[in-house]
Length: 598
Image (cartoon, helix red, strand yellow):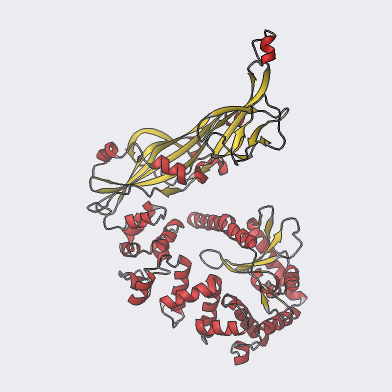
């Protein structure tokens, strides 16, 4: 494979439909359409009386000159006097119309429009955001990196394009420039090429032609300029799903790359690196289980094969053996439209390790009932006590009036029985209480009474350390907030107010492995609302449980069940995604660097 040959034959122009596809599907990354406006002085046509008085020039008025970036059309409309705003009319047919600058305002029909308002263009009907043209005099460039797949003379090639959308004062334009390319060799090696030169501030600029990539700091996943992102740069890419070539007869034929690409997973170059290290991953991808492979590839693990080995038997080559299931179960599951997620397969591997009796098909159906957190708690109970399986747990909880995913309640009750009795072996009544909720509440109150001042002081050192270590993950979106408890008294009060068992979690929290966080209203941080428990003992932090009043049960005997508000669930998910995981990965990266320098 001659490098100079590919420097001449790698594509210089993007596929014909790439920019059209990006405009249609990547509006979030490239930004929406705008209506720009500015004030201009215009002359109106003379009226009849003015012509009769020999006045051939009409009077001069201020108008708003508007331009739509969607259709590139401009128009004049009436300006709001003394303000950066203009008028548009709403017709009876629901359409938006231009208001003549000479007309008198009709309060019932004409609406004042100002900056940041959303309007429909009166010419093309596109939904746009209103912005003053002076804010666009330097232009705004939004960008997203898009990968395309090619077959060039028997070689599979991944090319990365920087698709840019620049918005100017009088319109906008799209462009796609080549950035990096990776050619898959006959032995599975990757040769990198660049169409950029390294610029200042860690950015790169366009080059005139392709060249072999020699510097390690030039990579396809480097950050690139993007207006409005953090520090005006961002990273990442997306795959172009159209115009995919056939890889038959190329170096990519037996890699599973095409199936991986069609499943809309990201990071194809990192997938090829995983394939080179472990060839059977192709069989897994071609069987339709691309999501679990994509999870490992996209999470940035150092050794992706080891991470995949947590749920897959990497010593096997047949897909059903890799996934630890029978041929019959594999045949059924492989036909499902929505395959189980990485988390479900992780739970399946753990369930197998505790000698669960169910086959894969039945297990994944039970997982839909228990949910992920409930299934993890159920597996923990099976591992710790070995006296049940999923069907017995589900029947017991339903008999107690609880949902299957509330198995954490039983787990906590058994743990408190052991702690308070000082015995590891529990009686049948202690393992399967006849009144689970009452037993749980009684043991919670009993354990809280046993907390003395000396133990609370001992906990305080741990609480202070947790505040110092995890203080950076406190966060708010100005509606809800995530905060850490300051002392064991905060946990006791939380448990008393919300009627659940967090008051006895001071020991666990002070050790800094399974910490407690409070979900509060931003304007009322002193008011108990929801309680979050996060486990930091694994390779990544995992949510153990999220509960509010009575663990989502109410009534005189807690006989009624209610759900967590959607707003709270979405807020916690966003916090985990945007704050917790990035912080955790940064901490791990920092520790790794410290170990290397030590």
